[in-house]
Image (cartoon, rainbow, N blue to C red; front, side, top):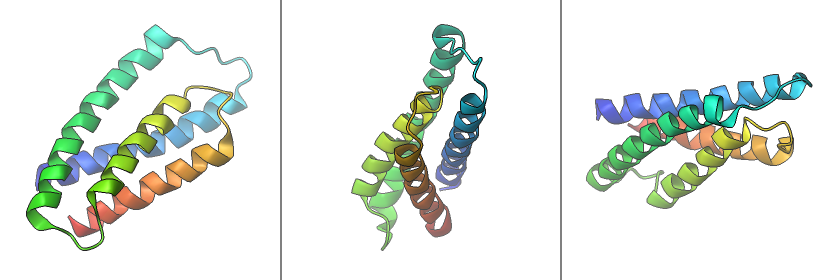
Length: 116
């Protein structure tokens, strides 16, 4: 279970970094994304962490059956977190939708941390 908590903290950190990154990128009009030098290595590591977390949290859900956290929330979180991390590298990202996904991610991750 400690591994699941640590992995959840890592994803929470990715979510927070994405918000900070998008803000920084949007405020820098001269920013040019370097897909292969910056985005791809970062996203590859993120996907590795996300896959590991998914396995751990799925196992935890099956074993403990927490009252307020369900597998569909994990599936939605996975998809939203992928979007948030990827979109955080693009200046064209729409703030409203991004922030909604960020908030949703934050809520579920913190719920898991509180119940784990």
